[in-house]
Image 1 (cartoon, rainbow, N blue to C red):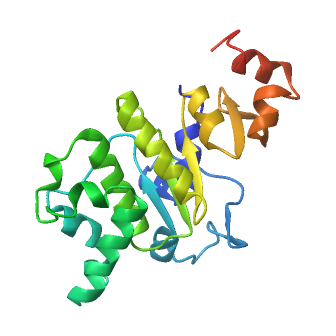
Image 2 (image 1 turned 135 degrees about the vertical axis):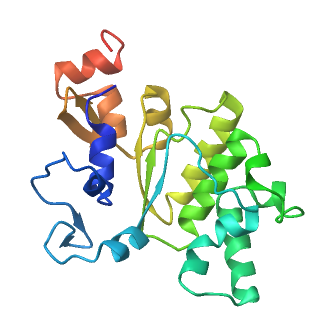
Length: 213
C-alpha cells in the first residue's frame, strides 16, 4: 500500500492532470505516441484508455443508460445501435444473462459484484484499446471476485488490461505479466510465472513467498 501503483495507473490516462501538486517526468506510449506530448488529445486518449475503479461507481441511472452513457455524449441516439452496444458490452462483462430482462432497472440496485461488472461493461462499451483496473475486486466477496476474474480472463483476449492488486493469488491467476512495486519504485517486471517461481531479485522472492509484506 502506498507504493505508487495507483498513481502510475492514473498516469496512463492522465487522470493525475487533475491534481495540481503532481509532477510527471518520462513518457507513456499508447500506440507509439507519447500521451504527454504538448497538444496530445486527452479526450481521444480517454476514449482509448478506459478505467474501472476500486469502488464500483455506476451512475444513478438505469442499467441500460449506464452502458450507453459514452455513446449518448457522442450524440448517438439510434435505438438499434444502442441496443447492440448494451447487449455486446453486458455479454462481454458476463452480466447480460443476469440483467437482460430488467435493463430499465436502477443500476444502484444491483449487488456489489454486479455493479462492478456493469462498470466494466460501461468502460468497454466505447471499445477502448486499453482498460485500467484499480483493485477492482478489493470490496467484493470471494464469489463476486471469482466472477470478475472470469470476466477479466475473457476480456484480455480483446483488450490490453492493466490491473493493480494487493492480492498475490489474484495476480498469479489472471495476469500474463507481473510488476512488483515497493516504496515508489518498480523492483521487477517479468512474465507472471517467472515472478512467482523464479524471480531474479531476492526482494521479489521475499515478497511473493510471504517473508515480508
